[in-house]
Length: 281
Image (cartoon, rainbow, N blue to C red; front, top):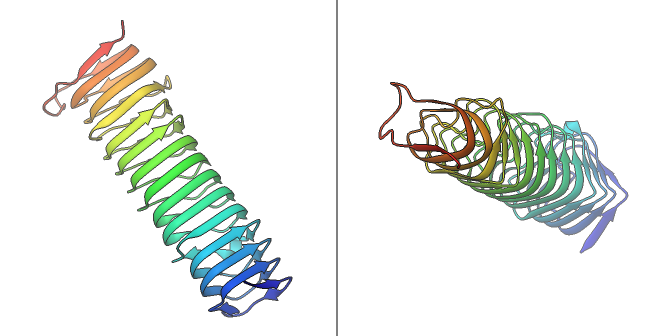
């Protein structure tokens, strides 16, 4: 593997069609598409400032690198990527990709990041700001995520999340086959219109959670005192620990809690309207 180090590149496509190379302490400044149509690339201690610096690159390892705000839309159409110990200040990263692994990565502008990724593994990642990260992605494994981005995990399939703290709005909207363990989910409209969502040992807060859901399962979960209008038009099997303030018009299933503030069953409930709601004795 050839080594390219301690150099600065700018302009259009300075490292086009480079294969089997290790980049050490290089800087991509102005221009576009600094690294494009490459393969088998390692980058360590590098800095990226120009636009679109990493497109169509297969089999790559990126460590200890920095992506500036100007490096927007930096990593697209790139498969078999591993990134560790990096900071990303640019938006719209990681699109149309397969087999992506991130460990100990900080993304300070998560706007429209992780779109249409198939095979995403995340460990100890932080997302700040922005909207719609993870949209249309599938086969996702998360262990350690802190995020305050809005509208996370929309239209996703086959997702397992562990040890996350997600503060957002409209999360896991219209998703399918989602399992979330040992996590804190804060925000309105959690998992609306989703199928096969399972929450285990989770802390939930926000208004109108878990509505219009099909085959929803909660195991050993807790609700904030302000949660209301929960489970509207959902089919649900729920074991709730502690108190839930208000349950509204679940369609079917079973719900048990230590205490329940109120249950709303009105003329708008949908058939079969046979959900069994009980207080744990």
